[in-house]
Amino acid sequence: MEGTLSTTPASSRVAIVGAALSDVGRVDDKTVFELHYQAASRAIADAGLTKADIDGFGSCGTGMNPPVEVAEYCGLRPTWVDSTSVGGSSWQVMVEHAVAAIQAGHARTIVLVYGSTTRSDLKRKRRTSNIGFTARGPMQFDMPFGHTIIAKYAMATRRHMIEYGTTIEQLAEVAVSTRYNASFNPEAYYRDLITIDDVQSSRMIADPFTKLHCCIRSDGGGAIVLTSEERARDLAKTPILVLGAASASSHTTMSEWEDVTESPASRSGRLAFERAGVTPGDIDCCQFYDAFTGSVVLTMEALGFCAKGEGGPFVADGKLRLGGALPTNTDGGGLSACHPGMRGMFLFVEAVRQLRHEAEGRQVPAAELCAVNGTGGWFSATGTVILARG
Image (cartoon, rainbow, N blue to C red):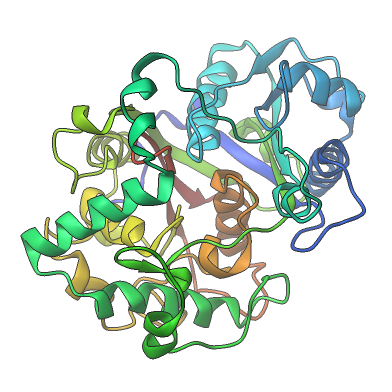
């Protein structure tokens, strides 16, 4: 495939060499620490390594000192840590950091891990420690008006509909296509097929979003292991190269969002593609944060898969489905498969499975390049990573 060579010198490239999920879905018998441990230990084993090989660790899924307390629970004593917390894009940003650390020689092998019991916490009416918001600082200006996360995404989506003629049926197709993909994934929370009518007749949550326009609540965790390409050659499985990575931030207060129809992925994506030396036309599959159907439309536009304002027609013809022109969220995404509070880590696990050609039952044929994009807050921050089969 033309244009697939990275602009990063081969001698300094970094690869994902391990990826795994913890128990996912309905997990009532595990703590958040157990899910972190399961995911991390499984990813390390998947890489053919042991915990003695790990000298870097990143996490932001627990309380006051995430990488310290989770590393301790996992029996690790790293010399490089990261607890970057920018919502659902945290792990895309951490991958950018981990690549830089390995290239600089600050760490040799890094584990990034996330776990959450959000679903079971809500079920048992326990206060979850995974997500918290405060009315201090810039947020104090939105809080009195009751702006929830979903309301902010709904406002952005409605504005897109008004400005560009995006239809509710086009948005609903995102949910329908994602559920279609989930139907091939035995680990997905929901697998029964749905129609556009099903999406539109479900309960209204925040106009224009009904329930099926919104991500699910589940439990679960995931982890990945990164090391140098040179070291990866000695490991058992196909290394997945990080060709390019970039991040961008935008706003916290809604009034500071200059264009509510544009994701900061327009900046992180441009940089990630430039650093990778590839274009959107080279990509075989995508893994995008899909908290709501509108998120996918804005991300497609921001990353250059279609022009600004054309995201609705772009997704309407089923191209996001397995077998379509651009299979996206091939595991069923946050809309149907798994969304335990924050989803950024799960994008990587599915991307690795696709690029290793291990996604049994839902494999994108001959997948070589995958675009991963995490979105944090309410399009407050994004991280874009371009991955390639080594």
